[in-house]
Image (cartoon, rainbow over all chains, first blue to last red; front, side, top):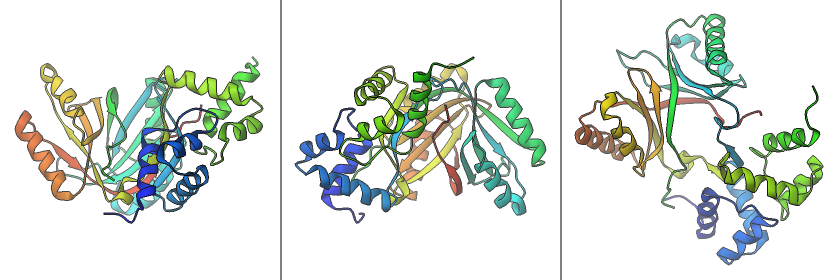
Length: 157
Length: 151
């Protein structure tokens, strides 16, 4: 399907599941795969260069990291302002995701942002600020009530 | 009010390794030099956070599109008394994210699939099985994708 070598696939699978937390994690992976530590490191480097790996590191559970005001906000942004507003919102530190998405007649909101704040009150202040600054007065706040699942996909490599 | 200096160091470490885990045979040793903590201290600390579930994942985050997968955000309304449906859907292997949100459209989830056709099939089968009306919101442009937090 994709131009990945067998070795790359094996390493990628392990990295998706997770690195072991020990002195020499790459060596441990290498041992399990019957590769050398150097090979494993080079494969990871190449997967990062090919942008197949977006990020290597830890992912924090943000509601446990003291961030409890999380919401997806869907904004109605006029077509001609989409680039400007999209880039501006993407540059804000408390915005983790900013996507343009398909709209419907009964759902005209095209720009989606994930916003994160310490609490609900702070969150609504941020939303208010964005609304005023960019003159976006039509939007839907989809406050996160509960995260049921957030997992890494099971890729068939 | 001065923060505990060690706590500050750990905080900086966590900010750093969300994105920049060293590609080096002794990555924690590299970090220990950078953050003036011992290698063992760092390993013990991260193990502890992993156990407490504060670290959700330690590894690679994949660009699914590069692997020729397609993902799609979907939303639906599920009556409160049938909310267990959301949990059933969330368990499916094709669902990578599932959230209950405070809105009429109260259940939002992401489907990953190998093709546009698979995606439509999954949506149709969910609609039929659970008598739902699902709205699909495929992304047309991504301005930012970053699940990294400044602590």
